[in-house]
Image (cartoon, rainbow, N blue to C red; front, side, top):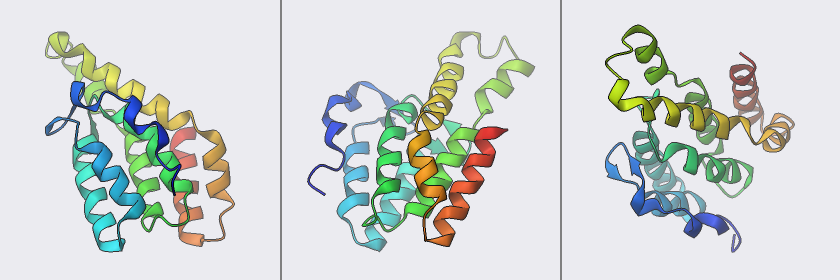
Length: 157
């Protein structure tokens, strides 16, 4: 556990945004997932989901920076909500709210083109960790392996 989330301090969380404003609370939430009891971890994951994938389909600037840490947490057996983390990764991979809006109403997002970029960056970040996905697909925890399979299918689409 000492090396978990080692690169967290390299991300300028205070300079990037999540759905609530500043993303500076994200490191605390991620650390709670590692060392918190099941109840605290689920609450932290709920808050994190709201901040980086609001409503299950709206990503924000901090989403792509958070994804590598979610992959790391999904690998750690002591994390009590690994299945829910994989579900969150699937939601991020499927998020196309801004792209869909821009394709129908291009003038609406002309001044907000960065949202489409954030969405693409977040999806790319989810796709980047094929090794962890392969590991999760072979997990003995059936629920976790099924969640990983659903994520793999979403990434293949």
